[in-house]
Image (cartoon, rainbow, N blue to C red; front, side):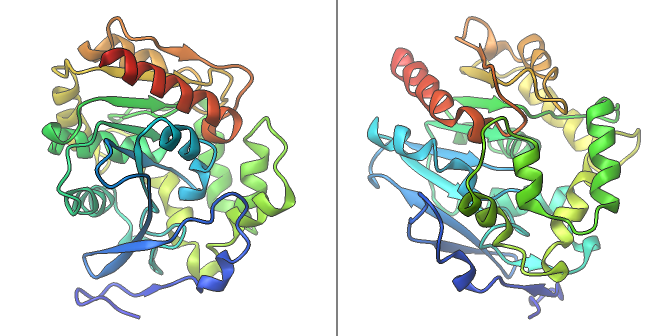
Length: 302
């Protein structure tokens, strides 16, 4: 299949998602730039909405431990699959994945709801993208929460990320289920591991998963550095509530949370938490705790 702009893509057959544990929500989709961007929308339509953004190489399934807690507290959860992941369409050429395109696709997705979100929670690439969306649409979000993410501007992200970058470009096969199990402290069930493999029937579907690590702007002059600097200029003036919920034992981004505390005015005085045990995928290891902390925080804000 090909978009009007010439992007060739594949679409994961829906039967691959037939046996998802604890994620039986109705899939929906929005078209962005000729590509289907899938999502789930759980909770009352008139309820305050929370945007939940995943990263690499996961999809909305990652939020299955958080969604029930938030919905039971009266929130509406909108959970997209980024282009190239989950049920969303997957361009087959790595060159079709750029940082700027992911920001544009996700911004178009968020715009399509015409909402002011009560909050956003973003982790991993969800933060690299979501914080750029925030910078472009600062009035779209009343509050922001992040966990185990970063917004680099041309400097290295540390040896943990360097190891992951090298591994991601050479590993064969690129087994997303095994990656998730290796980067969490909880023991995933066989069905959960298979759910992370489900979006990728073969290598033709994995271009985005392969390319994402190489897009992180960790070198001067790399694509995204200037736009991230502009985003930091917005964040450095952001006075609305900004919360960090972090697993500090994450070998990739465990030490990155302090940057937001130091640079975002809205982080001052907020009930930040560091959660142990836990690894990179905080939604798997501590999802219920993260959601509960968000519910308590938002209730206290009034």
